[in-house]
Length: 132
Length: 137
Image (cartoon, rainbow over all chains, first blue to last red; front, side, top):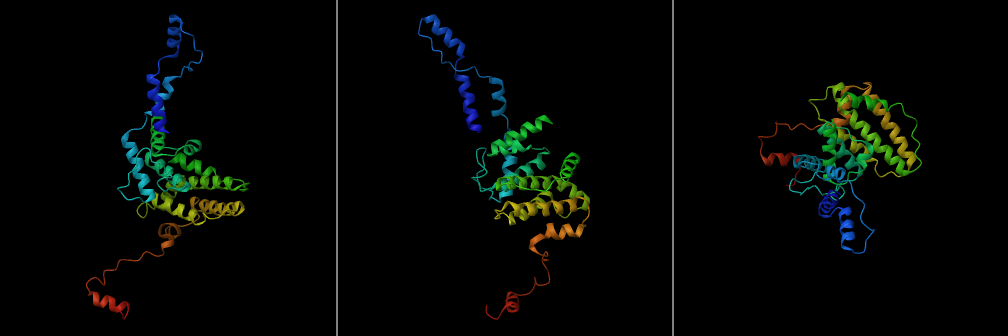
């Protein structure tokens, strides 16, 4: 999910502002295309995709490895899904509880449902720590 | 920690669980597990378990208890188990149990008594050790 939002973030940068394209088209006499994209609010997108620090991801990965009893060499990156690492739903809840204890935060029910990868968890933690 | 414990204890004023489907029972199980995990710091403080065990060990004890019944698919049976679990949690948090109950049931748990790594046989030879075990070695 983080990769998708990151790619949409970069594509926002490269896309020209829709208003300018229409004005340029009118000036040059080219046929107007009314199918320009909706102006997207850039500010709220930015916050979500570049949130987590690497050491938060490291801590999350350490807790995940300990909970699932994985050997230390297993690569656990931001994109690793919990299900792919061999965690069932109870393991996922337990990992979230472990993160709650480690970072002294409290995760809401609906936020916990949306956690699927290590990066999601790290982003949510950063958000909650900042709110405190 | 104070507000987590307070929030956890509020849940004890619950109605009888009556799940319509397996999915609802599943959701209740996760809720119960979360409530239990959030009560763990309170439990450790009540029974002075800080030197005996740490929170993640208690958490894994709780999850292994839940996992023992993971194969059950009847929502009514799950409700019954949840009720027993809630009652147990209530007893523990209200200090109706005692420290040796907690240690025996959840710290030492299903492994049985902790075997002490006795030092009495360390010096003896391998021959004698095998001799005590069986005739054929």
